[in-house]
Image (cartoon, rainbow, N blue to C red; front, side, top):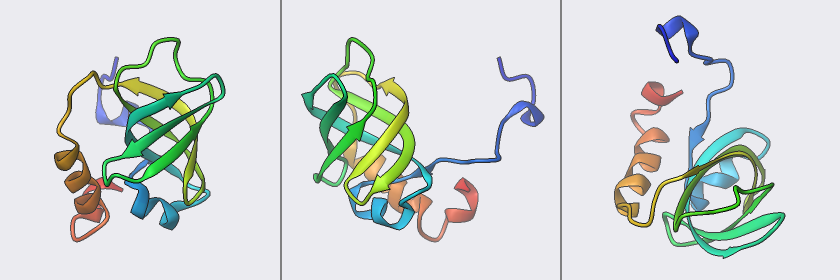
Length: 113
C-alpha cells in the first residue's frame, strides 16, 4: 500500500513507449501495451499500440488477457525483456494509450519522467 509520495520508487522510472519509440530507449526500463498475437512459454508476440509487432521475452502469467501492459528493459528496437506483466483485459482504447506514449515523449515529457 502506498502511504505517501515518499514511498514511491522514482529511482528508475518506466518510459511509456510504442514500437516506434522503443528504439530510443534500448537498455532502459520501459512500459508498453501490447495486443497478444502469439503467446508462448518464454516470449509473447504482440502488436504495439502503433500496430507494429513486438517480442516480449520473459515468463508471462499462466493466463493472459487480449491486452497486456509489460514493464521491463528494452533489449532491442523490437523487443522487451519483461519483469512485470499486467493484464489489461480484452478491450482497451489503444489509440488513447498510443497518444499517452506520444505525450509522455513530447512536450509533456517532464510530467512523466
